[in-house]
Image (cartoon, rainbow, N blue to C red; front, side, top):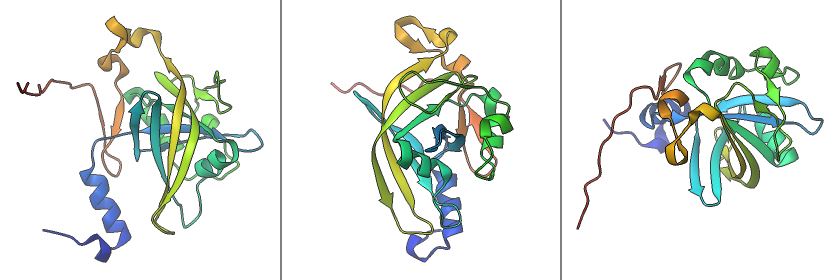
Amino acid sequence: MQFDPAELDPQLAYKLMASLVVPRPIGWTSTIDANGKDNLAPFSFFMMITSTPPHIALSIGARDGEEKDTLRNIRATGELVINTVSAALGPQMAITAAEWPQEIDEFDASNLTAVPSEVVQPRRVAEAPANLECVVRQVVPVGGMPYGAHLVIAEVVRIHIRDDLLIANNRIDLQRLDALGRLTGDWYCSTADQYEIHRPKID
């Protein structure tokens, strides 16, 4: 089978791409609006793009042709926090993914604890095993409405890691981190099963 994306129904294009580009890390993003109100939402179109200085990229699509609260908040403050989703936090992450009215605080709806950040204004998820405080460097529109998105490129300015996750040489214990990955639909995977595949050394 082969498909021409230009001829596909947008929903089918989304389903195909979201099923093939897997597993995806989840950027559980906390922001605040211009009045200081918290917002928390997960995005699986998320990645690391540099390490020195560290930058992440987050793609935020539209909802019914309108910008999501997360993007509006990012435009208003220029800041965000990425909170790592562990497998144990999966059910609460799913609650924050619901289409809540703008006046609802997703921290309260999901029974999560919002704690102050060190550098940025948005608060962190206290229960998350790690948090990345970020300052936005670019917001790039990609594609057209209503199915386009905005690519948010942000610099990580503070890293928080739960003490028990650090092992020798400042490495992360991935078993304890137990990060959740997005597959498609309501399907997810964890990093509990891990194994090595060695790259060949070319002389």
